[in-house]
Length: 186
Image (tube, rainbow, N blue to C red):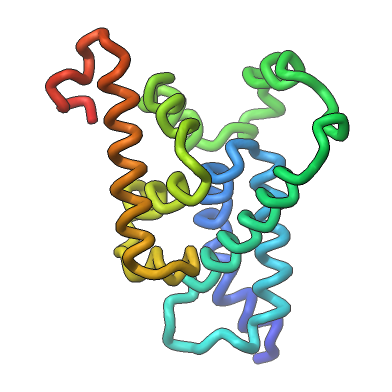
């Protein structure tokens, strides 16, 4: 079996997982698809360095995480006048559907489960905090795996996760309407 076939056999079953994580990171379907495509290109180029018997999903997520960080840094350096379209353009297309499969079942479920308060709390996190929180609390990765994926020491994962959870909790408790006062909604 050639290298291309081995790559396809090992990686293609994980594309949906990569896309799900990419959507959470980018919060935009088109950017998520771009991120997955770039991740796949980099993974294919570096597939000869992958050590069989190790966790390929963690390896791919590390590539994706590093690619996202590069995209994020480049976007942060981009002058604002390069941005086209305003918030109204985004809002006007938010509810549009391109067809029966335009929105994933996961996205539809997230829209009904996660309320705006939680989404706003997550928006307030730094990108590294959001990534660690997502990998730990949504994907269920262990701290060591997250450290490998994010390319940071274990202690950094633990501190980012703690700070992210505290920030989300503080945001929800600060709302003052009592919904989260007893901590059950957290």
